[in-house]
Length: 440
Image (tube, rainbow, N blue to C red; front, side, top):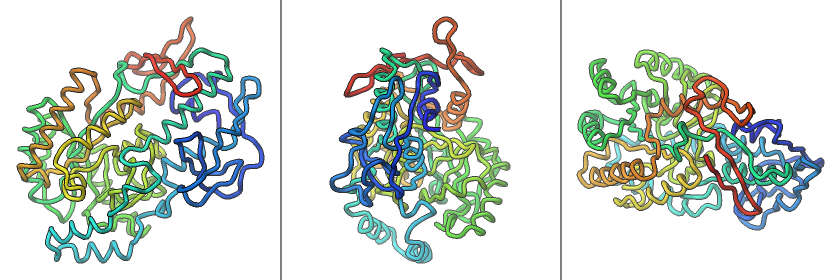
């Protein structure tokens, strides 16, 4: 329902959110604006364009307030789902360029590393300049929700709206570090990488490829767990074909689920972030980490346009919200943490999830190790100064699931009700014509 979009995202009282949908929406979906800086995709009252570039209809001009009800010229639940599930892209049903992708992965073992990277740079040249999603971080979903909050505050004639804060104990933001182990060299570097992480007091998850790339023993995996690190499944064999065909995917998904039970893994990530969210019902995991926020530098373009977790059926999606180390080092040729710091600050400003993919395979090089150490030092400073929550992916997914079951009651002031309520905090959103401010 249209009213539920704020309730589900903010866990705010239902009685304080009242929306209605204007009649006469366009039959076809397309791009339009909801304010100057927010590009949406869906049906709207005005013209929905096929291309996000150029002059777009601004739906904010046609918003009406009828008593305490906000009448909208589009369905925000539809638009947000279109973004989170990447329905605006031609590849929403799976990886694009499947023939070219197949040829690339067939020939990949025969190519020298320098040549592979040259091809990738050519393919991704200019991709950062795409109009939509916004690179290097896209906060479209958050901007839509905040505009709806401002409209609700105005319609309800309230000075603020109570809601459940995004992170436990009122912490301002959250960060996770994940390691995709792609080859034997990366596997052998894992103990040294755990030492580096432990030197900064930061735990992380390791995503293991179950077949063909290398072999892992139960003892090796147990040694990671014993040190407080997390084990997840990374694709099946990382050959680029997981989502190429439905029946083959189902066969592989069955094997992937078996490995998840064997490893005791709760999380999943596909190879090269290939994905088809329509097929996720075959994966038996508590959470996934395969959807980029803005996928301009990824093998499969698109992006969920949000910096907070969300649900895909019963599975929590933890979006990848920062540039991968491989792209930073070998596509952009950057060994500083300047881009990561820019992305981190954007995400912190909107109280989102900062998530990293750092490959052990690419940290064997000393120069890359120093960059990674600089990142860990910076995150440690953020924890000390701003108290961001640095957690394991499983902890974050577990919290997001718990939060989804909590609610607010008035007894007499606003209180949290539900399991794990002691971890949650009541927050308030206040806003004017231009922005929303939060206080916990």
